[in-house]
Length: 417
Ligand SMILES: Cc1cc2nc3c(=O)[nH]c(=O)nc-3n(C[C@H](O)[C@H](O)[C@H](O)COP(=O)(O)OP(=O)(O)OC[C@H]3O[C@@H](n4cnc5c(N)ncnc54)[C@H](O)[C@@H]3O)c2cc1C
Image 1 (cartoon, rainbow, N blue to C red):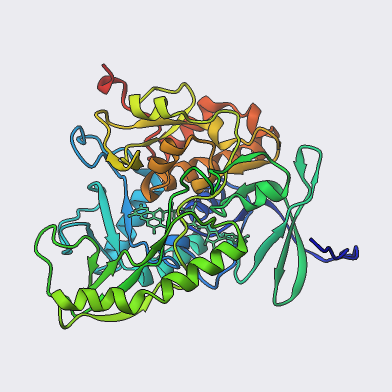
Image 2: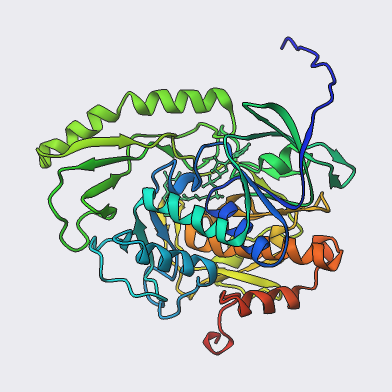
């Protein structure tokens, strides 16, 4: 491959803050809220002009995994800020509903079923309001493109936006890019299911249609305010962290959308396409290597973890080709899986935490993922307050703080056999 030597240059440091969160999806939003509420001066950097990641840009309009989908499901395993977000959406009007039932009114504040569908436009607004209330500084239209490190410490993140190339410094960094861009650029080890021979979860282009009849219970899952979100055309064997693969995936799936909708119209003649997601949905890319990687056995057996900070009860959607439900309430997420093995001032939020593929497939659902990310943001702020590395944080204090903030950090002891 031919190369171009990029000349060294000086760039302005446009922010110097406590916690820098890269990526404004469900993970980044929760991490930024938690860090700011815990007292850290926090900046959230996002490449698009709005927040929400896959939940808005990808039109993935159902928060799954507040509890097990099937019995045993009597314990709600995600609360804290994610529950608060649902309550805010409820308060904002007809902004969320019980997924698979498709009508507003089934949800009560303070309690969630397995999944909650929502209006992505209201979500965009509500998260901005919550972040403003918490005092989070936000930079939109800003792409993280590098993260120089000095040994085990990220020195700054380098971003590109309409103002040019800029640097941002923090005392603690959170990678919430989904793809682990920050950690990878800083030199942290990561795992990725390779394209050949193994299966990275496929990508899908979601779209919304109007003109469908009001759904009967369970008829179609993502119906809200007259719109139905549909799983659109998909592609497999392509890598969402590779620019050429992303281009191929977007083009292939976009060219199939009209045919997809035409198929739907055979059953529902009034159905019409309202919008496609502004980006193809990427399910899986890098998983950063942490101090502990959650194993397949951990997740299938519901193993308890001494440093548990959240619980994932969501089924594993693609377990050797089938949806694998748990026969337990959920598995515990250890704090160590949020701490990269190679870096001392970075924490992981969202779907790039350290996990085997089955554990990842469960915890990547947005309810557990938001709970995990609340822990990440809280931990980042506590590391700054305590002047310690993430690896040295007093986990008992973190667990207590999360519980005080309404989060579920573990399976209740009385529920363990
Ligand atoms: C097709 C599909 C179907 C799914 N179905 C469901 C479902 O039914 N229910 C469910 O709960 N979950 C579902 N998921 C999973 C869920 O949506 C994701 O796992 C979750 O959104 C991941 O959250 P995140 O914050 O880690 O990453 P993302 O949601 O991807 O957010 C990452 C954010 O970081 C930004 N970003 C990325 N790179 C950079 C960069 N270099 N610089 C600046 N910003 C950057 C992105 O723009 C984005 O806003 C689905 C996902 C897909 C793709």
